[in-house]
Image 1 (cartoon, rainbow, N blue to C red):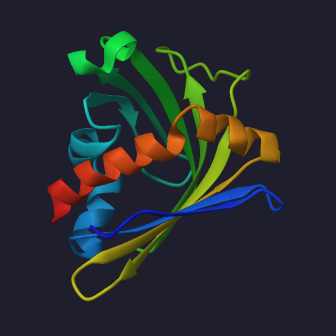
Image 2 (spheres, rainbow, N blue to C red):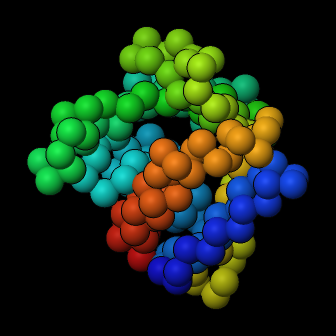
Length: 167
C-alpha cells in the first residue's frame, strides 16, 4: 500500500483521503460491499468489527460495532464504538456514497456527534486500486473535531488491514 494522502479543505468543509490498496478493484469493492469481508478489516488495528445489519444497496443500512481487543490500547480496551452507514448511491465497482453517523448499540443515531456524507471512489491502477474517500461536513469545525478524535490515524490503521486482506 502506498502512503495515505490527506487533504484537509476547511473552506469547502471536506476531508479527502487517498490511498492505493494492493489488490484489484473487484476484490477491494467486495471488501466494502460484502459483510464477511467488511468485518475482517473495518476498524483500526486492535479492533474487531461485527455488523448487526448489513444491507449494501441504495437506501440500505450498515450498522456495526467496533470493539477494542488490544490490551495495549489502555482505556480503549474493551470499549465498543457503534456506527451507522446510510447508503445513498452505489455505482457498482466504481463508487458509493453514504451518510456516516455515530450510533448506539440499538442503531439510534447520536445527534450530538458529527455526521458526514462520504463518497468512496475506486480506480484501477494495473492490479491495484486507488481509493479516494471524500468526507463532506456541515461545518469546518466538524472536520477539526473528527481529526482531534483520531479519525485520520484510525482510518489509516484500518487501511493497513484492508491491504492485508486484498493484497
